Image (cartoon, rainbow, N blue to C red; front, side):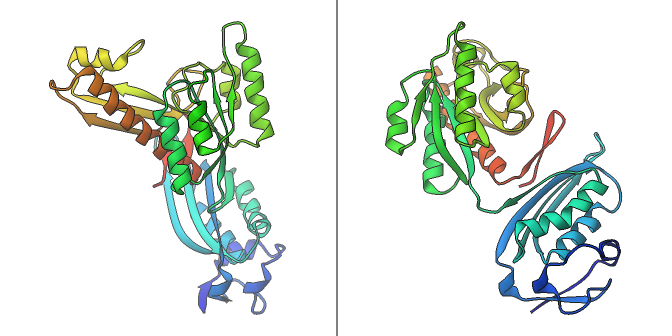
Length: 321
C-alpha cells in the first residue's frame, strides 16, 4: 500500500471536484491520508506546462495530480530569469483516465494562465518526413523508428525528387512525390497540407529537404516542424558548405536541429552537436562526418520532441532530459 498526504490548500479549494473513486477511503478532507493500491497505478501520463512564474505553481499542480489519484514518478521544472516564464514536465502513474486528470488540472491551468498538454506515455507521435535526394537523415529516422528507439509513427514520406522512393519502399512507408517549382510551389504546399490533414500528422520533419517553405506554412507548423542543417564556426551558406569549411581550415564542424520558422534556419534550437576535424581530413571526409552528425542530431531532437521534453520560450527552447 502507498500512503500519501493530501495537499491541504489545494483540497480546500476543490470541494466541488469529483474525486477519482479508487483512492477514496472516506471523506477526503484537507490533510487526510489517502490510500492508493500500487496495482492501480498502471497508466503513465506526461504533463507539460508553461506559464508566468509565480509562487504556488508546483504546489497546485502536485495537489491536482493527487486529487486524481496520481503518483509522481519524475518532475522537472525551470523558471527563466530572462523571460519570467515557468516550465514544468511531470510524469505520473495512475488508474484514473485522462479525463479525470484533465478535470483536476483545468482549474489550476486557468488560475495560473497555463499553456499545457497531457499525453499518454508511449503514444507514438504521427510524423511526416520530408527529404530531397540525401538519404542519411531519412534512413537514420526510419531505422531508429523501426528498432523502437523513436516513439513515432511514420505514415508518409514526401519528396520533391524520386531518388528516395526505394528507401521508403524498403521500410514499407508510402512515398509521395510532390515536385516543386517556382510556379507550382503553392499547389505543392496544398498537397502537403492535405497529407498532413489526411494522416493526422502531429510532427513534420525536414530531413535534408532542400526547399524553403512559405511563411504561411511555417506559421501553421509552429512548434510542429523540425529542420536539420549544418552549422559551422564560422557558418557557411550556399553550395558545398563542407568544401567551404575545408578551404577555411575549420577545426569544428557540426549540425543544428531546430523548429521551423519563417526566418530561414533561425528557429528555436532543440539540439546541436559538433565534432573536431583537422588539416589531414579531405573535403569528402568532411562531408561523410557531417552526414553522421546531422543524422544523430536530428534523431535526438525528434526523440526529445516525441517524448514531450521540449517547451518553447519565445525564440528559445527549454529541453528537459
